[in-house]
Length: 491
Image 1 (tube, helix red, strand yellow):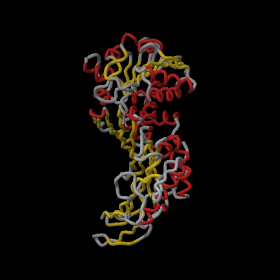
Image 2: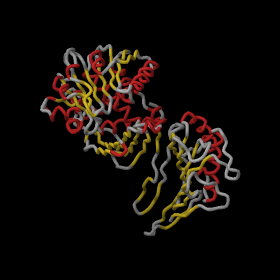
Image 3: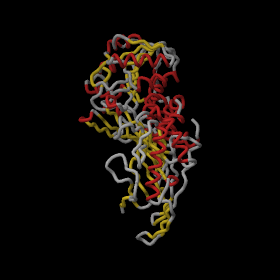
Image 4: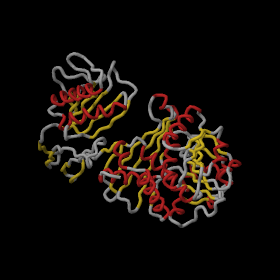
């Protein structure tokens, strides 16, 4: 039964909400700002505001019979993510050894002048009681103090409490691991190894991959993808939800986001929730490009061409360095400002990154060409391809997208796909099949090549293309390894 938390002089929430709601064994505290409830004063610094916000949370919890020691989850909303270390230091001091699970996000604004942080919370009641359920079976509610996963500070991991009832023992909560911890746990080289193993498993027939769910949101210029798969020998199954909302940058928000649910492959029980904000998807996509180049590109390369200037334009290059040595980049993006920023940032990372006049110049200069755009009309033409070139195309991951002219696939000596059925449905391959420029028999799956069941590149003068749409077994592989690395506390 829902019950509002009431008491005299309770702090007001940020917005027209009740300060808190009690529901069963839980207390939900609405978002609290750093405003002092008595005077309305707001300090100018994020440290003082964070402390005051948590004191406001504490006051509401005490009115509900709980306290900070029983908080199991917090949401933190910052105006400026650069202030995260300052907020985090106060957060750590206020909670002490008990650190609840947390989601931290940057927001464009908060409803009040001078506000820099808002914090909401979910807590358990600060007492233990035994009650009878409707079947007469005793159900024992208790609170466990949360443990950090090997001391990892940011992500927060909530230990599952056990509820005993007629259905037996079940986990009431699962660990929630945030992006910062996942970034710390996973290296680029490790990701390439994990994704290579996943493709090998696919080539050996050890994967079960259902159809992808693609959902477009036309009014918001956005899309969702839901993917999953089972890999024999991998202890977990991941269900990944990824989004791309391409007007978000104008709002000060990232264009891509997502999360993954990790489940035990032997019991079906949830093991963890990975709030990666799309990081693991970005990493496994880049790793897949590296795996493809590892078997399809020439051994010695000098120049990598990049068409695009977003996250994948960066991650593909970083992962490619795991399997091939190079420093020179020739780059093009349809937005000049984005292109200049990309080249500047890649130079800062040690690459000799040079802007090109157009996509044709990129193609003709490249030994390996990476296309990473959301284009819906072909950018690369077949006549620009030259002997020895390898192309990794990652942009066509939903129906309607296309980066390569269909004739490019017909001209190539070898076309490899990450999943034949999937690429035939919405990859670059779809356009070539619809144009009757080649048949499925002319295409090899990357897994079969990695598993040595079919050959990859056999001559230096071949033109090769990898059509990568992103497959659920990649998500299961990267999520299982990232979760295990966080549990181990090291990559």
